[in-house]
Amino acid sequence: MGDQISPQPPANRTHFHIAIICALPREADAVTLLFDHFWDDERDLYGRADGDMNTYITGRIGDHNVVLAILPSMGTNDAAAATASLRSSYNNLKLAVLVGICGGLPRIANLDAFLGDVVVSKAIIQYDYGRQYPGHFAVRNRVEDSLGRASKDIRSLLAVFQTEVMRTRLRRDASKHLKHLQEKAKIERRRADYRYPGTAQDTLYPPAYAHKHRTSCDWCTASDFCDLASKMSCADVGCGLADRLIREHSVEEANFSPEIFIGRVGSGNTIIKSGQDRDRIANAHNIIAFETEGAGAWDEVPCIVVKGICDYADNHKNEVWEDFAAATAAAVMKAILGRYIVHDRDSGFSQN
Ligand SMILES: [Zn+2]
Ligand SMILES: [Zn+2]
Image (cartoon, helix red, strand yellow):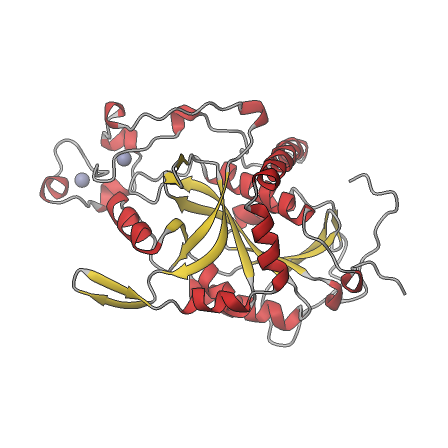
């Protein structure tokens, strides 16, 4: 906020140059808490192109007019189709940011990564696009090859974020935005709980430690995968607290500042649910996180993935961290947009 002049809604869709794409309603819910204005509070002002079935939320975040699109479902194919529609309606986009939650590596570039930290994509690789040979999966680097086509804008933005000084500023700004989001959620009486769930809820097991019934289950005795166990919490199946990996993590819960990791994000239609698969695929392709839409969206519009780590891409998943991770991702997204420079000709203010 704090605008000296109240911004006016842009004249038409061509004045929007930033899109935010979310795969899940809970991701979009967190993002909307960081809008400074909505242009569609009363009614939709902008319509959509023929054949576009997406629904949009339009408004302003900081100095930017933004259009928020929520994908109809998860997965790279639907992401591609919906992003194609987005581009047909909003044909002057300069930057798309895919905001939400992801599975992260517990250790990234020699640093421990924790739940609630945020990953920003330097490149997107579709790890399940290729051929599965016995014991070997050959990935075609189609997506990453096309990164060369990313606008100079995006490449220079990402280069700057890799400096220590800029990452410090991003973290500081993100922390401020997160706090604002949490306060606003309370005022608006949102149902989602955006408070930090606590370090005790951040459990990491060794990669080979299976999430399975520890007692009296025929499936679990015979194999490492049990459908019933996969739907239950670690406490309920009996994953032992003593078997956790202990890591040092000091958190100031009231002023949480997510660590920001920049690197290659793996995107695919297969959700990774095993610590061993996670590590194998991550090592093979130098991936720091896994998500399911980036590759599809990237096909249509150059984008940055900004996702909060809500699990470690293993089978010990639970939903405790989803809202908080969606909130930290939204906060980092707003911090990034705050550093994104608008060219004069792109100005979204309706001048006449
Ligand atoms: Zn079982
Ligand atoms: Zn477990």
